[in-house]
Image (cartoon, rainbow, N blue to C red; front, side, top):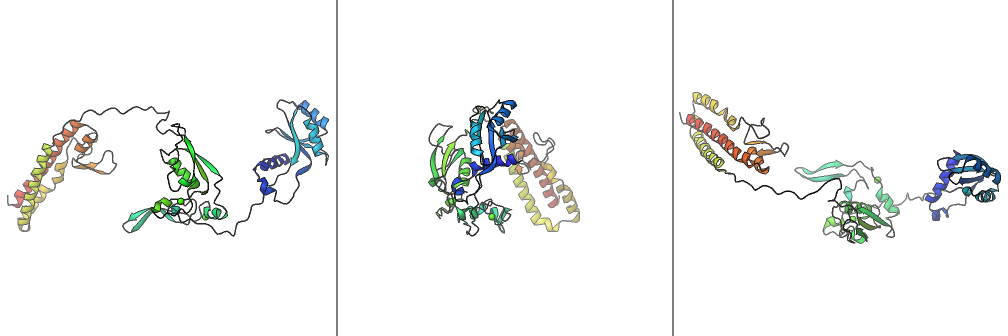
Length: 393
Ligand SMILES: [Ca+2]
Ligand SMILES: [Ca+2]
């Protein structure tokens, strides 16, 4: 375990910011009485034991996965002992068990969070979540919003920006679909790039995803243009950073799919709507006659007439059914409207005719022009019967 900690210390040495570490209080630089030794690959146990004897070190433990041995040596003899090991050709390296320290974090608790006023920043709940509503649209009783945030479920971006908004000396490469470098939130950050798909130095985004990612990284902070307001857009995590664009994705060349030009449609066939138009015309005439008769004589209808009229009109809508049903959906028998075959529950009027045309089934279209016309004609005939009853027939 102690060896594990020592190695962790070494690893952290590379992660630590040395310039900051230099400002830390002077602390112990190596563990007394210990060095770290690594042998070359393929050196066997006997050779390792010989090396320890020759250099007067005692193996304490070995981190097998990394091939690092923790070796005990006399206090004050660490540098000399490491040198003795290094003279052995079987040894890859030997050095004191250095201690590195993570710099103390700088306290920034007193800084005032910077909340930018960019038009769309309120939608960036991941940056700064105040419990705001978003994905809203105008509705009858005011805005209707799909979501409401959870306060402080965010990355505390305003608090971080109070410490630093980054630096233009940092350039971030966006390996994506390119960048819309003309966007007012990104233009000033653009540091050039390359389009690997088209082999040009113009990596203008041909999709949108790369631009989205670029904005999350470095969209301008409080670029309050005011006109148009949406140009202020969003704010990037590091709004001072520069952006290097790289279009590396050819959207139309997915190697897992084959592509070919679409085949030409067969020529359309004429469809005669005459039967349907005639039926509609007849229905209009019948409906007008019914309305006229009802207005004139409705209030004076006898009880017997009303019973007879009810019996005639009750099955009226049944006239709109056709026993064959719709093509592919024989259970839908109403030929005036039905749920659209391709629109879920969206209503489709004259479905037998319209869906057949949309699918270029012109034979079916012609057939259902006739069927629908027959349905409307039957409906008109029932109205005519009712009109005769009202008129005293
Ligand atoms: Ca927060
Ligand atoms: Ca902005």
